[in-house]
Image (cartoon, rainbow over the protein chains, first blue to last red):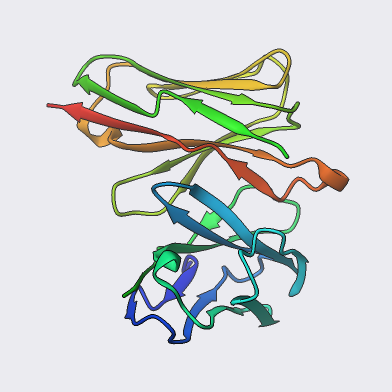
Length: 113
Length: 114
């Protein structure tokens, strides 16, 4: 079975540009999580969805960040406009129904110049 | 809000030595999970503990959940170079009874000198 798929794996952009990160959860999983990892702050939960509905977005840093899940097999995290402090590794993870274990994707390393 | 603290932040050992990392939560946890992240990789689930005082073993790894369900530990016996990575504990936030939102500790980076 394919794991969680994220694209792109690496993204380098300039300050002010829009960035879109993509995630395909494991088929059949009904929870999807977006995390950001930095050396300073560690692994932070940004937002999570259940059955495509956002449940908790209290970790989203500010209005520049938005996330959508239009269907059970696709989610996006958008940053507009991007800033250098957004540079981090962004992970997507999913969980199956009734399961608490999270399956992480390979991550997207974002660098904002 | 809930805080999950891990110590030590870093640990360097000689291959064959033992290693232990400790995790403490500011609140009582319904369960605790442990993940491992290899350098350049992504977190991978190791185990979940649910019962007070629970002890589980995976080969050379021993996981414990405290009696008060506020702390946990991971012990590795006779480390190997394949054990290198960052070990995270994670506990669910109990607000509203959701067990799906996890708070991760900052992790312990283990390096092993062959």
